[in-house]
Length: 266
Image (cartoon, rainbow, N blue to C red; front, top):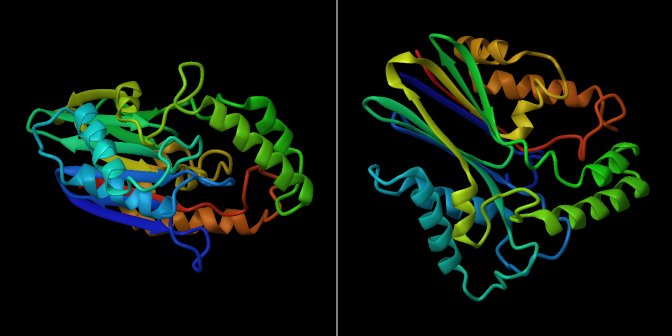
């Protein structure tokens, strides 16, 4: 199988808060969640995503994916005990893991990452919609204002506080933070290995190419990844963002987002 990866920061001068690892056996994509408030942690979101991702990638291959994530969250927390890990905004990340075994392709999704699986029965789109379903009133209010305006900044702060109240809560959504119990809330499953032709994993910044931009559909994403690679997908995302910097055509929280795409296929 051919394995290719692209991960672009939203701004070349700012650390990338996405993190990716990809091999013929294992793919891991993390998207650190934007911090708009104090976090109680001196390390930052980029450090958290990279530290958690490395712990996931180093886990024994025979361990169940939920246990892999739970153990990685616990080990990452142990790396910075001097920080206030009980802070409501302690650094967090969405997680997507795809593992290729002899007979099955396993997946775990926690948060709004997207796993595309091209099977003999057609493409399957696997994602976790609980993030998008949280704080919907605050999200709609923020979408009314152009990016960069004082009104937008104030609305995004209100949205962040509403999201934090629902983060890792039974009535809200789940992401990796400091409590390993969140791993039990992940979306997991497996598909027969002989029925899987191609797999792609996208952070939400790369998935913008489909929603909201509509420049490709999901089969088109797989085909472009196969023909021209992940960098081309992210390049198209950046081109679309550049045509709407204020977010008036496609309402969103920021002009550009960190964008990561991984492709595994022939």
